[in-house]
Length: 310
Image (cartoon, rainbow, N blue to C red; front, top):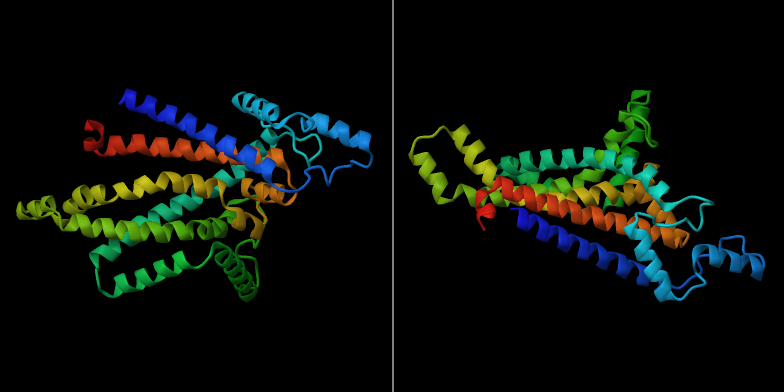
C-alpha cells in the first residue's frame, strides 16, 4: 500500500507539472494585451510595468521563473488588482468556495445515494419513474438556468410570504448558503443517482446476494451490509473529482448569487486578462483535483479489500 501511495504521488506531481506547463503556454498564446487596462500612458511606464511582471524577458525564461515560483508556492502579483498577490486572492476566496462546495457535496452525495437506492428498490414502479424523470431533468438543464430559476423562485417565495425567508444573494450566514449549495449540487446529485441506481441493480442480481437470501439473512442486513456497501464503490470513485469540481468550479452559482468565491475571481480574471490570477487559480484547481483523485484511490483500497490485494 505504501509503494502504491508513493507511485500515485509521483504521478500526481507529473500531472500538476503538465497542467502548469499547458496553462502557461496557452495564456501566452492567447491574443490580447494584459497591460491594456493598466496605467501605461507612456512608453517608460509600460516598460516599468513589463519589468515588474517579468514580461520583458523571453518566454522560456518566464516559464522557468514561473515553475520556480510555483514550487515555492508563489503565483506572483495580480496584473489588475494593485499590489495584490495571487496567493492572497486564493487564500481569501477558496474558503468561501470550499464552504459552499462542502455543503453542495453533502447534499449531492446524500441525495444521490438515497434516491439511487430507492429507484433500484422500486424498479419500474411509480417512485422509480418520477425520480428518473427528475434526474434526467437535473442532468439536462444547464447550471446557469438552474441558478437563475432558483433565484427567481426565491424572490417569489419571499414576496408571497411578506418577509425574507432566505437571502436572494450575498454571503455571510448559513441562510445565504442553503439555496446556492442546493443549486450547485443538483447536477452532481442527479448524476450520482443514476450511477447508484445502475450499480444497485447490478449488485442485486449477483450470486452473493442470492446466497445471502438463501441463508435467511434479514433484508435490512442484506441491503446495508452487502448491497449498499458494494454498490456505493462507483459513487465514491467519481465523488473525489466531483468534490474538487464543485468546490472550486461553482463559477455560475457564485456569479448569480454574488458569492465572493474562487470561481468568481477566476471569471473576473479571464475578463480582465489577468494572466497571473488565471494561471495561479488553474494550477491550484488542477492540484486540488489531482489530490482528491489520489485520496479517492486510497479510500477505495480501504473500502474494498480486493483493491488492496491487487
